[in-house]
Length: 126
Image (cartoon, rainbow, N blue to C red; front, side):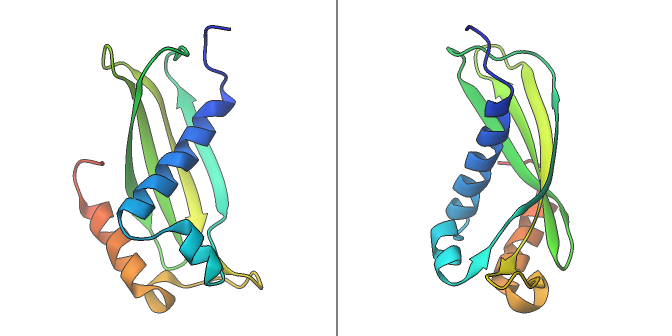
């Protein structure tokens, strides 16, 4: 099969999100060990053109919305060889405790909230 299966794009979104949150100082393993979980509330995407297995894909990620209890990350996947937009999407997340109670980011995780707010205000995503 030459074309990348559509399910891979969602996996790439998750890998990019985990990578960038870790890069910004919020390691998911550490958060989970402290009793916090960040489930995906929803995922949407648009396939623009096909990626092939040999393509190198660059993923640009940013924070497009931030509320007290949730945040939205946006993704653009670009084929490195020609700069073509392959996929764009977004994922909505919240943070909960192990007992499934909602965490209010601004109140309960102010450092993370402020970092997400800073990232939302950036003009160009990483």
